[in-house]
Length: 165
Length: 367
Image 1 (cartoon, chains in turn green, red):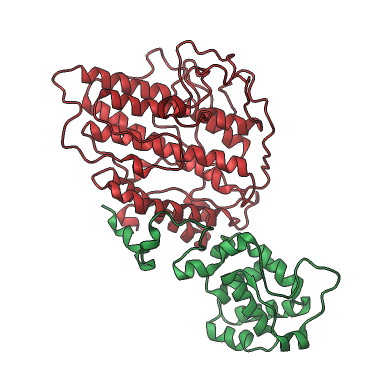
Image 2 (cartoon, rainbow over the protein chains, first blue to last red):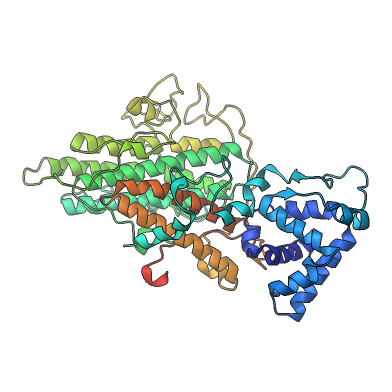
């Protein structure tokens, strides 16, 4: 299994979106690129190992509490996992917390593509942020929902289906 | 030029299409017209949506422009059916063909597949839009409509037939159509019905003329057969007919002043990158996903949205035109669901194929 596959499975557990939905955004590879440029390899490797062992011990998709205990509460892995969640939902890379950077961060060597500062991952990633779908909304001006649909309540989405005659 | 590996042309007898002599036959043919116009959409949209974000911009815009006008054609055919007292039927599984397919107007000389954006897809697109003047002995969409127009003329001259009865369902008005060439016009009599059907043909195949010369240059002579009919019919900007828009993509060049059908396009190059395309499996079917539950669900979700769209269109053409407004929202959701599928590789596919939607109407029992 390569990291991309592991990244999708971990992301699916962290975001509660299915792997096919995450792949369906078309920007997962960019996110992994950001992550593996900024986060030291050994920490990423530890994070994926940790999730893999949770899966091995507890069926294919570990329960939320296990992920909270083993990953999100961990001083080293937790902030990385939180950044992965924020990246998927908001398509923004947030600078890692100060204490994490002091303890675990490594200065970037050379001039890599991504630095650990706050930035929007890409123009396309912004459109693909999960937050829009989760809100029942859309990225304004970037992904058309159809004329007049802004007056529909998000919950109305399913009701039109019942018009089948 | 009409032969490729997978489909050989079938020469049709001189009397290619059966003349229409009853209102029932007319309605049947107009229903076929609606099915024909709709059947082009999965074909064009499959190629369109496999184009990766921010790539192949020109090709994307060209295919999209044709898709918009296919919806115009569908509406025109539906308006003629409504005006003659018929009822368009879009809300059933038979409305949509299963791909690969032949088009429902008896154009049996080529096969329509759902393909990613590729030279093979463009070759099919050109077959679909083939001008009648080029397809000697073969049925084209233009001839199919010509047969309907003959039927309308015949029935209109019959004093026993009330061809345009009063009290029919409301037709789709022009305000519902935007973003493409042509204007939806109300159908009330033979002239307006003929106009609406002609508008379909001249967008796809170009302006037909009896003495069309494929060596006449563009655009010095108005009737070259290369332009769509939007300029003479609707006073809209000049645009190439669908066939020639696709020909530009297939050849990777623009038509310019002085070009003819026979010269092909000799203008500036169109940048096309066939590698910047999701590698969608040809003619996706539910069997492709039977071992992959998440892909199966994603495809089912697409088909739910697709079914919802067909139900909305059915309502719009059967008394509630205002349903077209939410239907446009459904069209966008359909697009996003299709793209979601197309970005997913099919696991363990030796050819590294990606998924794609299967375009199926789900009847109530399968919901």
